[in-house]
Structures are given as C-alpha cells and as structure tokens.
Length: 198
Image (cartoon, rainbow, N blue to C red; front, side, top):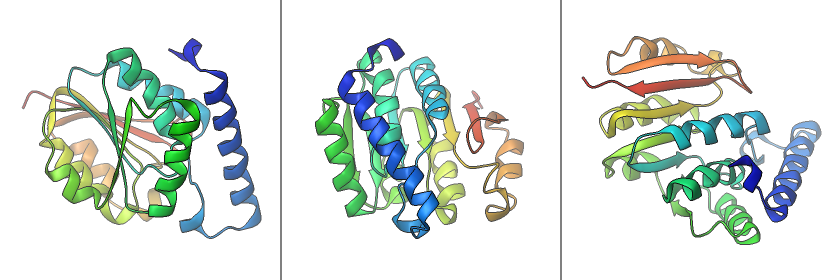
C-alpha cells in the first residue's frame, strides 16, 4: 500500500505539509489553516482502514485532502470509495485540486455539507475518521456508533493535544459499551474504537 504512493501523491503531500507548517508558524487563524494530520498518523489511519470489515469508508473533516490521500491507498486496495465530508467550500476546492493532481478522484468522493446530517443518513459504515470541530465531535461519534457494522472502526484525531477542549468526551467514548477503545499516542493522539457486536 505505502509502496504504491505515486510521485504525484508524494509531491502533493510534501506541498501540503509545507503549507501546514507555514500556517502554524506564521499565525494563520485557526479556522483558515489546513490543520492536517502528520504523515505517521496518515500511515496509521491507512492501515486501520485497510483492516476494517466490509462497508462504507467515511472521513469527517476533509480540509485540503491530505488525510484523504492516505485513506485513498486503503480504498484503492479494497476496491472501496471514501466519502469525505467538509462544510468549508474553500477547503473543498483545495481537496478537489489534491484529488485531481494525484489521480485519486476515483476513490474519494467529496461531499459538502453538515457532517451530522450526512452521517445520519448513512448505514453500514466499516471505517470512519473523525477530524471535526470539537463542537460536533461527540455527536458525530454517537451517530457513527449506530451506523458502524460489527467490528467497524472509528478513529478520532486530536484527543491528546486538544483534550482540554473536549472535556468528558474521551472518557464517555472509552466507557461506551458499544466500543472497545484505546487512545493511541501518535500525532496529536488518535482515539481508536472498534464497534462491538452489542
């Protein structure tokens, strides 16, 4: 899977990494930054997605499409399509450029809109990556819990770096009997949860 990274994908990833680093260094306002995951988190998510049972693949929080590129590797290997959701039209323009430049449009479908409404209409989710604003994070995971297939996986980013901004959320998900969950200290901290058969 990682050996299938094309020169175009590597070039776009490097470009987005440089933009993200510059945004963080120059004080670009938080809501205008790319706010993307680091490469090791991308690799981790791709492995999770590739290992998920059969079903839909979902990403909440597209930004410029960096994490979608990593997840596209798993989708291509599985013969699946990732549905990537974002409500920021400017970020979706960047994501469309990312997909077009890397030849990934066939395995990633961009959806503009409110993630809660879109996820509420889904069923049979095998894997979900949630990199959403803190105000909708728990509601999104709650919706996904009832839409994941048994053994389905959900990964939530920033649970260590932004723990103070999501008080009680981590504890609530870890205590939820519908999930077997653990916090993986990679990148900004990824809560990884597997849907039980309950």
